[in-house]
Image (cartoon, rainbow, N blue to C red; front, side, top):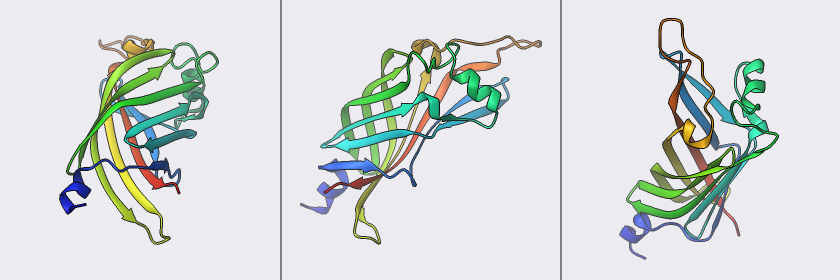
Length: 178
């Protein structure tokens, strides 16, 4: 394989996320002036022969406010009781150098919509323990209403507490499985 093929090919085989060095998070504009962030504590991601799949447990969402964490579990937001998992399944994955574009389907609250994850890919490299690794830094922006997450409230001076657009961010360290 030439060095050009190595830097433009999608790694083959099975790659599992390293939970210590990976994260799945989201960010949304709050009160029109600041960005609110949350993260999922329990999730999985796997790249297998050019196909990226993943899921996150809604009950594992982490935010700084305990009351808000509870509100996110209700039907106003994720409805964890009825829809305990968020899911992603890629349809295509394209790499050009360090850039990657992944077309796939995201399911939130029982609704599946097409999304494009874009970002960078690095590796493969061999770590200090002899494991082969790749890194994926991916982002997409979704409209939360497209997934039935429509709770909001008006601000006294105009505008809404929450923006419609939500950034979804995946920072994945993937280890090749033998």
